[in-house]
Image (cartoon, rainbow over all chains, first blue to last red; front, side):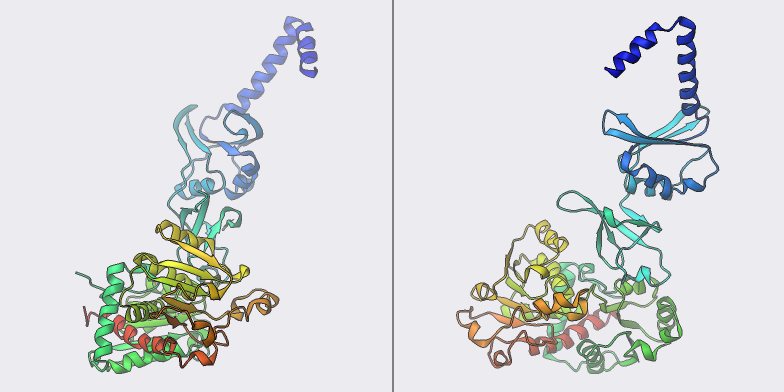
Length: 177
Length: 306
């Protein structure tokens, strides 16, 4: 009902008024989309968008950042999207993203052109970026870089197995360093 | 050709089936002739950052029987750890004084870390609640000796299957030998799902029970464990289950002739003393086997036996 009402109102506008609205929308859209150089992280599960921001430390970044969340997605229902101007990710940083958003797509843009588009892949091992959840693990008590093997349980859920204490932790227990 | 020279032993899964069998074969040789003086030119460091009776004395005994020298400490209080020295620095320093380090440390994963920084091989004598591979090897030796084989054993694991590190290692090792696992525990101390997955992935069977009497007629080995109060986060939970299983001599009627009772020791009350005189009680001999196995391991890692 409401949508039909809006459409009726829109059609009642004259050509000039319509053009102003459409140009305004276009400008808004262009401002968000037109990344000259940088990275787009797409297909983030909506509930993890802000976690990805936190993991990447984007709160403290001085780059131009556009964040969209709970956007419609054919694949996932809703999704999050983050666009970071002038930023390309190192492998360690990509690993961090893959733990919080395994379905994410990474798109790299140079001079307005997509130069690289790839699904984030969870690596076989995760080093240095995650804390072991076992307080008695040697990595929580000595100056040691953490190391985990990425495994699946019998329900095919992702788990991290500590290289040192051999304890297996589920996704909910993951704490980033 | 199996060669264990300079190979640290941190977790039982570090060794293949063939390598495990090789250590057991060398151990048999030491059982036949224990006083083989082949370690006279070597120094072994024994670093026990937390108290231990059986394991430490068993290693010391193994080194003495081999004619080697042993240096080290029996508690962190008498080492420079008390002054704040890191584990890495302790290991790097002691590796200058010895050919091999035997280490027990209360931190989970400490042995793996030590093996990564040490220029000499490390034998893990227990790293917190994680692994105790030499206990596992002596358990396997005891099973092989009493059953004539390690293949197709029906083993009943009884008591604390949740926190007991010896149980987890034994499950991993026996999964190489087509074992069937009979798991007896209170609901709160069941085998962790990760270990059950290990059994499943090996294509093997496990059955869960709460009544110890059910497994006695079907088991080749009854492996009793102590419910370890120190592992429980909640003392009330410990009180509920500490007396869950007590094996008595009268319960052994109807057990298989080849059945033997094992226990990693120390026991508290889970095996009644009236079982000790039953020929099926094997736990003190099992502790003795620990010396042969540790002699074998030290000799193999130093390249003195192969």
